[in-house]
Length: 254
Image 1 (cartoon, helix red, strand yellow):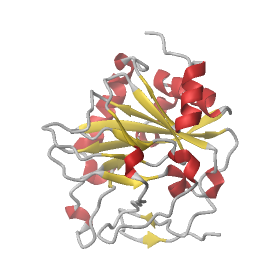
Image 2 (tube, rainbow, N blue to C red; image 1 turned 30 degrees about the vertical axis):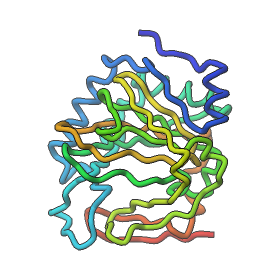
Image 3 (tube, rainbow, N blue to C red; image 1 turned 135 degrees about the horizontal axis):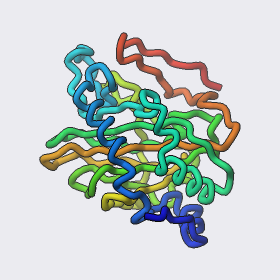
Image 4 (cartoon, one colour; image 1 turned 90 degrees about the vertical axis):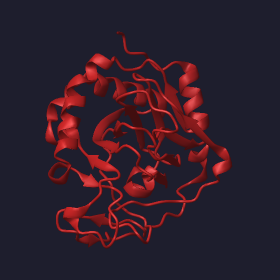
């Protein structure tokens, strides 16, 4: 299977709307090793993953893992050379109009009959001002995914709104943040296996709860302009949470 190149219409749509669906982008055969490694993470999530929806008042060893969060590439660096990684960098570079490099990835999984959505947020709200207009994310499911399973939703043209005010939900112990965009502009993006979405660092996005009988599994690949420092110059709502110790650290902000 030949991986597609970004067309002029792809680039124009992304820059106008702040997001893009690319159908038939990834050869599912190229995901087999990744899926196997992520299944290993799921089987050992208490030691290999975080719970992005860890509730306050719940002991670390009693976390429910309603949103499993881990970095496959940090544990298995060979994914740096995977075809889906090289393609995402090339395609994302065309969309953003600047040369990009891989930054980090996240395996994000929701268990069956999980009532927890991933709240509306913008990636730059987590990253800080260092990544202003310098980051893009590729979201890649491991199977067909619809609204009832937790597909991606975007605020159309939301990248034009600047960084919205975010908050830390009062009942969450993890570093999860949320914002409150105008949901009348929300667009749901159900995908078939092999499809991906891209979104700008300022585009508000969320995924719905998983109401199905199977795990919802996906990988995000976060890309940044070549040579850009990592996250920093943070907004006042930013917090780091060490899920091994439970310690919360608020970094300095401007």
